[in-house]
Image (cartoon, rainbow over all chains, first blue to last red; front, side):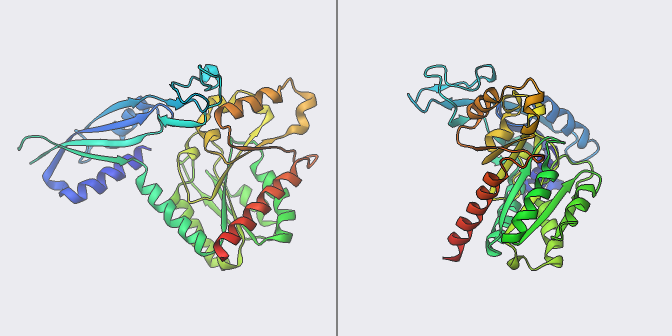
Length: 113
Length: 230
């Protein structure tokens, strides 16, 4: 995942002329229902970019809640592992996921040299 | 220095992989080749499943395998004995196959056989219940194996894998009489995580469930071929 993030940054920077910019913050949106542990992503990113053009960049992560929709009554709910991800209103299995699968670079804060 | 600029890009971190996966899928479709991504934890029985499956499947359909492993070609060597095209993909330190690796594997496969002659490509992913679930490879369907020795709670503990799967094979069910295992609880946990998944109980020892699994594959191949032949 860290490699994918760095490759995405490289791709973005090529369009901006990498040598003329300094990236201050990479603002991510990471869903709760993904395989990404935010602190691990930050740590591995910081280790991977040491000495590179992204060395001084900071990662910020906005966690997007895991939210589902009850397929019986259409109410939104926050699925819990302890409850088998079932809707608390009707005890229905989770069919529709509204949010929580996001793995996004929301925005990049940078300065031109 | 100028004032800071915020570039709001809303870009999927995995977009490069997704882009390559789409290219792989276009290739599979052009070859009229159904691709299954077979995933599980290490030791759930993926390779054994393929060994038994391909013995019968190869009589009806032209099959090939991309065999993902971190450090050895041991599984690929087992499958090569079935006289089908097998391409090992050694991932090194990576714990999953990604779309680029599969693209490379497909290029090697093209040197072994004209993929136009194939009906199905089975991709055995690296044993891992976490990362393979997030990385598309261009597959048409995802198949997840879960052996009963792993415990009833795994669909809840590794929900992404089991949520993403089109088919879940419960393996090693011949061991049920010897274990304190509640298969109803497992099925309930699967239904909670992924109510839409097909579920088949299977044993590589007694061969129970293989008829259903082979039937599932055959139907998918025929449906796929009909859609693309028309």
